[in-house]
Length: 175
Image (cartoon, rainbow, N blue to C red; front, side, top):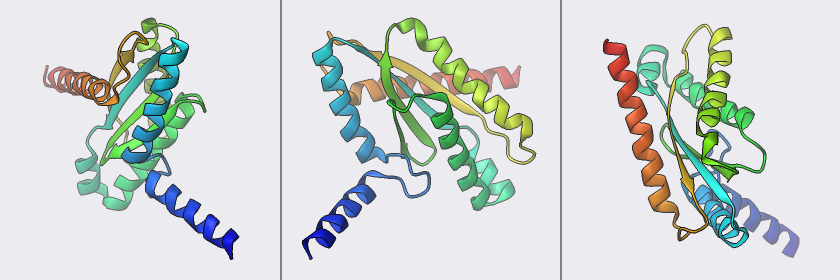
């Protein structure tokens, strides 16, 4: 039956674009949709933000509480990303404990509020969670429509900013 064939093909396509654990886009799905969004932003002369984040201490969560709790932490972080960002923003798990969010921005002045809104969600979660507390390092980069629409350099810059944030957090913990 052709209807079953079409339905099965669509299910396979969705499986190839989604992360099994979190239900977010996987790297492939995120990049596919993000590149389309960047072309649209370029055409409409709109700016975008890209937030790159990772779950701090996933190995310690896995070692202390088990891999099931580590998976739960990843799913909880995915849920917090959904709570923080708009339905129109693209959220993906790029691999392991790394996530990205791409959305339209009106100004680069949004950077602190993007990071702060996400941190408020994490803080609220940690206030009621008794076991594994969540912590995330974040890097936010911007895409301007006067730049060529290239996703990889944007991801690389946001990733570098995220690692700088992680380094600063470790330095503060030592002091």
